[in-house]
Image: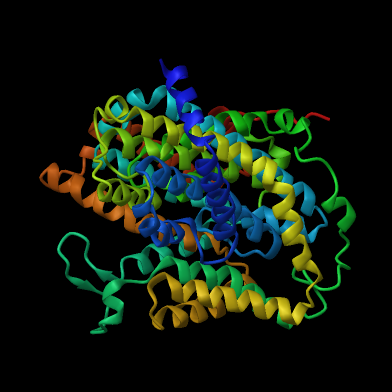
Length: 518
């Protein structure tokens, strides 16, 4: 039954008109993901009116493909310029950009392509064959469990702190604090606005991301004008012919090298995506920290310095999570991410209400989406060479012009999010702050993670406490929540003493310590 319905979905896509729409959507999604600030969510919002003149199957298929393409392509600008093209690519910058600086651009992009496609395909297969089961699992997740999941993510930030847990924790707390500025999500009362109407809408994380990653890097390169930012005349030590050449597909030994990451992060990312509201960004955050736990000790210590595993882990998880986010959308009518929330609006505008029974009642639409997601991830591999060649040409742009273009795109992306000038000031302040924070060895990633996860955690925490009539033990009396809280405590405290003999034994016991193979 599933195979025949899926075959019908492929047949729908392979009609001439739908195929043109599919190819256009994939290219547009990849470009929107690669341009800083122009993420997949924004592109889907802009194109919803276009679906009015389309058949619902064609229109919603187009939006799904844009989402899949954008989640992957954010890694391109993250690797080339240290500018996440989308929030999902935040973690890819930590190792992807250092690999670029070390002359490993081709390996970094090949790793991102292969692992993105693998994670997306596995996530889509889970979506196809296990949607009813996964939806029931997601339905049983209460506010207590969801808060515990986010708490675990915040605790894992200590592993992204370059070995300095106090600094990483301080930055994470700062991000959480920035996230609570504005209106209280439960009571609509103002918090930390100081009487400013502009601050009532809060601090948007897109300008902050563009500031601390893109603008701070521009400031750094302006100061160190003898060092190129992935641009200039090509004298960065990278063999450009090698980058442009080679086959479409990455080496087959990637499967062996990244076997643990590919296997575990694909499943783990899909399950994260199934959680309502989590999405691909959360999947990338968890994927990076979880991947750091399961690699050999020698590689684990190199995370953040430019290792392929640091690119493989978040790229596998975020693309799997992007597919998983469709599970609650299609089976419960609850969006699994910001982009699927917009796609839900497209469903409603076409008179379709996702929820229980939709797979049976709208099988043509559902399985066309499934087939489109599978083809999109295969298309990522096939179209990669052309896209990469286009981006490689950027390296020949003179450095002053390239830095100006990066700053300009960052400003456009910051302003386009909400079209208010205040976000430009937020980006500028974040850029200056990010420059000085990095100068004094404060990690930036925990700040951004806290800003993204904090606003997700607070409503779940408060709802859980309200439902339990003020009893905080609810987080320990529910089995799943209790396990996650204990794991969060271990994840936070283990790095504090992991360099000791006792600490290393605990790490080896919990997460294993695979040997490095020659």
